[in-house]
Length: 141
Image 1 (cartoon, rainbow, N blue to C red):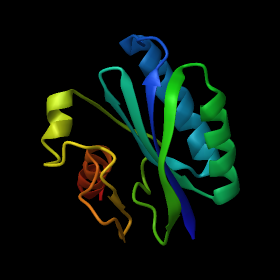
Image 2 (cartoon, rainbow, N blue to C red; image 1 turned 60 degrees about the vertical axis):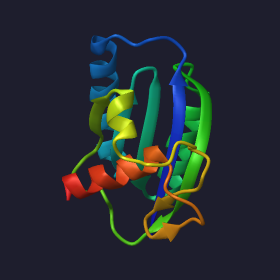
Image 3 (tube, rainbow, N blue to C red; image 1 turned 60 degrees about the horizontal axis):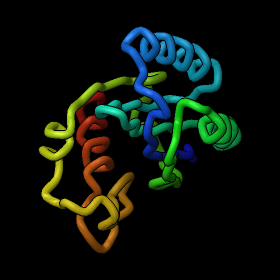
Image 4 (tube, rainbow, N blue to C red; image 1 turned 90 degrees about the horizontal axis):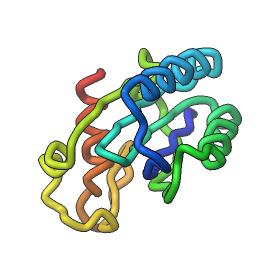
């Protein structure tokens, strides 16, 4: 089984495009060595990330993310196990979007309404971020 983690965070400071490119380059290199795949979504000052891989390595990465000063207001949205990688060929896919793009993925205004990811259904509708990730998973597969 492959573990996945989804989290949201705000940037502690607004990163320039060059800073984001360097972050992605370094993350992709490290993720490839650790067999971690996923996607980083950047919406204005917020990060949404879905990462997947071997449990021990993924947990270690998430602990580093928690301590990373570039993140603030970090919220663990979901974690669990899947049979097959959703981003098997992407060490770190990346999308930069605006709030309007996020809103187009949902008809639910409340992001705490529940979630749907990897076959796990909540009582309510999908939160916008996870619905977006699901759509992007379809795009990458």
